[in-house]
Image (cartoon, rainbow, N blue to C red; front, side, top):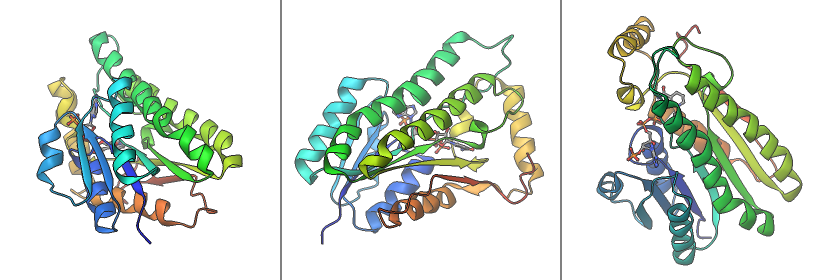
Length: 241
Ligand code: NDP
């Protein structure tokens, strides 16, 4: 039987890219979205549509999903992964950075849900996997606005799970600790970045890899449809916080 379409946001690096590679190897057609479309295309995955989409732009996200579904059939899963982490002290941080995190991590994630939820409810089949963070369950220094967005992801995901469960649609929350990706590079405060890198070094250089998290995402998706892994919380063994 041919495999169903899977939609992945933020597939141009890190966890999204690793998940795209695993799900493609498992035989799924994919819709990959990010702003750096050239990195999506460079993966050269078969049966894959790569589209330049800023997930805060609802119209272009919806258009990409519609185009992919016309090519490959209905989307059976959404990996709602795109996100930004701009760490900062509230007394000093440029409010434009909170705006960006709320727009991408919360409103962009809702745009992804909006694009697929109605179809999944109608078909009584589907899986929405929202990538939150351990910072969606507990606080960390210099994370105030980021923690705010990830607590939102945890809260809305559990509420969405309740709402979609009578329709046989699964909602899964993935909550990783520190992962070795480009995520930290967008923080502009050099002192905070240095401190964060030292924290990662204190774990003996053994933070999670993007592939570790991608494997957990694939594990949750590959369960039978009647099994919903509600949440996966994972971190390096040596991550204490
Ligand atoms: P990366 O920075 O490597 O990847 C982030 C991805 O999000 C990129 O593909 C980027 O693509 C995309 N993205 C960012 N903004 C937008 C936007 N406006 N529109 C579309 N795509 C966008 O980091 P990670 O792989 O680590 O991050 C993936 C998720 O994992 C995030 O939600 C993050 O919060 C979460 N996470 C990460 C942890 C970590 O320690 N790394 C820990 C816990 C959770 P492009 O720039 O090309 O648009």
